[in-house]
Length: 474
Image (cartoon, rainbow, N blue to C red; front, side, top):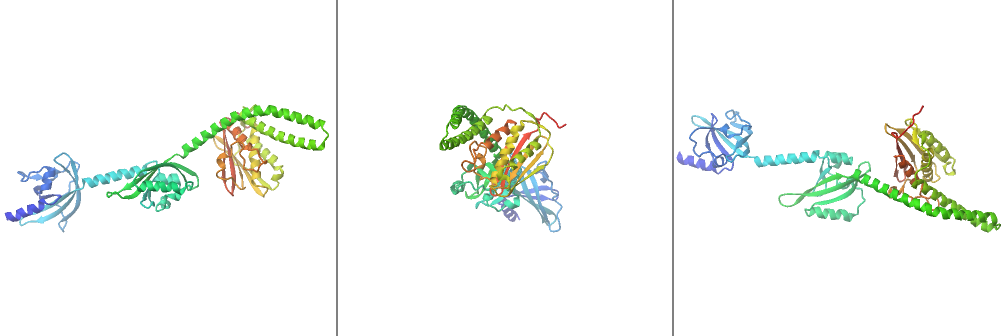
């Protein structure tokens, strides 16, 4: 039998996995070359080696002699102590070998350390991607989304079901030319990383600004099999930057307005005086008609100068207890008297009573009248409705004035509070009403914003802090 034994040993030795022949007493009787090399075992043990002594202290201990009727046990995971001190994770297969007078166990231990490490790395990566606060999307090579993390769902407003299988242009703002995306796809298809700031759209239509990094996913053969897109939401940052720029611009315009008002006001007063003298002394009707035209234009310029002064210099009006609801109601009654407002329905809803606030009543009334007149003009003489809603919470009073007119073009919205900007026809507006209104609201540490949908209408929202009030109803 020595020859047959040698042949058996040769076959066992060429197996790449660790192999063991174990007695039913759990002692190692024979092991192959791979097991000897990895675990540092002798070729011919001088004493029985308990199989469990080859395992780490925290390794599972399979019950080796216990086998089912078919003599094959389920695979078990174990951990070996290697000769060099490393720990080897292995998948253990156990079979019974029936001998003449006794049975043996044949164990094959397949090293799964590398695959377990990869599984652990993949688990760690997937957890990082899944639970990170940054929106992340993964697409296949054709650009179809195959994964989005919860942060991506929360940020965009879309559900996982709505996104998987869709193209990333589902959230596109459509503000970029085709060349922009062609260049991006060219970069990532070449296996390079692409970065840039992009503007997208949430499900509700709100703008979403993100800093986007797209990394190609490359397989072992070097082929691009997908793309990983990581977004950093900078929407709030963009909003704050726009507010800062707007504040700085308004401050600069205010300084310029003060200078213009001073330099133009004096010559204008002289012209007005001369015109009045001429009107009293001349008898020529033609001359009087033309001078009357000059006088009307002087009055128009004077109003513009007065608006500029009101915005650019500190108010001399006295702060007093102001009933915001009453002031709004009086403003509505004034605007109702205009010819353009005859076919307009005015509705005022008071959601919650507002305490008296420390404001300049005339200035707040001016803001209401300016916004209401703009709402009437937006209806262009057609039948329509202007709704004013008043409410408050613990911190702020809130007044929203909404019309159902033609709306404002999206490209005009950012400029709506700029001086001399108007959407009205030439001669119908100076473009200073909303600019002055914005300045008045900001002077009371409030905010005035506008939202509009073309063809559906426009809403102006005024927010004033309650913490500055000095008076209570009583």
